[in-house]
Image (cartoon, rainbow, N blue to C red; front, top):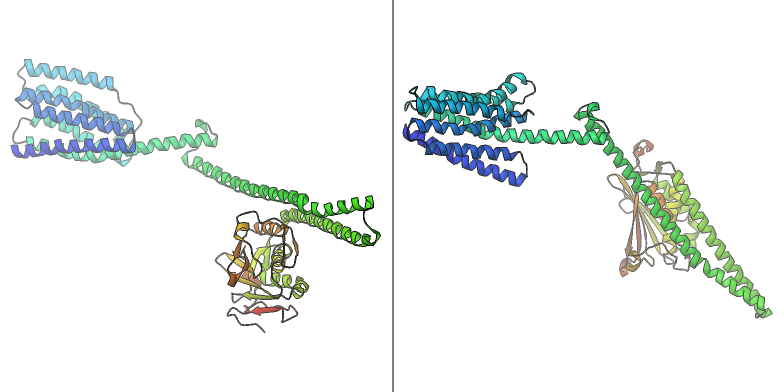
Length: 521
């Protein structure tokens, strides 16, 4: 029996050291101050076990060793009361313990009452601190207490009974093992429930902090608080509002950037492109005024003045048109538009220019049915597709080809304009593309077309990408539009067709391909 008691004692001592090390590690890693109480508890428990080991020579020493159990008892009571938001009354219970200890000391040293009766005063006074938290969680605040607190309440009541067991059976060799077994059971329960209790208190403190934060954010005073759920809903509403405002701010930033680009382009156009023809006009005007031009050359001079003046007026018209078009982008209304019909109309509008440059347009719809996008039909044709077609024609070589391809993605429709012209150099791709360039036959380009196209594509909720091709076998430029698929497309299609049917007028210029690449008749 002595060996069993020894093994139990050594197990309790060793696991106490282990739990103390775990509590220290948890405190350091989590930086949670709640683990401080757990550390104090295991330290006091370890000291009480050391006292039991040291003071074991005779009944008097064994009795005095039980006095050390007061520290872990008070820590247990404090932690359970703290979990319910109640303070532990240190002065009261310390005074009661001191009174009981003095009585038991007197009885042990100066009377012959024996071990049990002499030890009962201090044991009862020590265990009295366990009654308040136990009754609180099990009776007075039973509904408000959680299962961890209730389990702890039962364990503390078992601890109170264990104190009486110590007084009655500690010196009985036949029953001492039973007391150690009860101590082991209590110890195992505490090693589990104390950690759960600490974690519960941490969550409760975080919840209180959240309530306080939500109260401040919602603008309610504490007496106006309607509960965590209401405050959480208010916080979610404010977060949603903040996200909406953030999106609006992003849109505003895009608009400001576009306005800045437009202003930069206007300044550049006026200072450079518009200044060139006006400089010519000014120079010839000075020559005419001073009479330095022969009569035979005046006709040529007047023709050049007329060309320069027309160039300046055309540039002013393009600037004004770009500004008006930019403003129109703010008043469009999206609807379901057939991309096939829009491309058909665009090709018809460029019929004469395509024939002048002897260009061939090949159009392929890679799907087995017509495609519909979210856009505004007139803006899509006039300001998006026409600008892309204009660039493709302008920068294609005579007798070349322009390939148009539409394909369906998951949520978007891709429209690709591919030409095989002069292309865009890699250096220009790293710089601002919006500047004056000339086509393969000297056509004037200001860069406004690409800017306007980008404005409207973004208004449609889409995007575009410029893909320069610089290899000798595939020189040119590809511009890919990504427009939102129309959710009402299926309602607009009576029956699927193999490919859009166009009537461009000249089979030598236009080719319409089926999805498998065959020329459609």
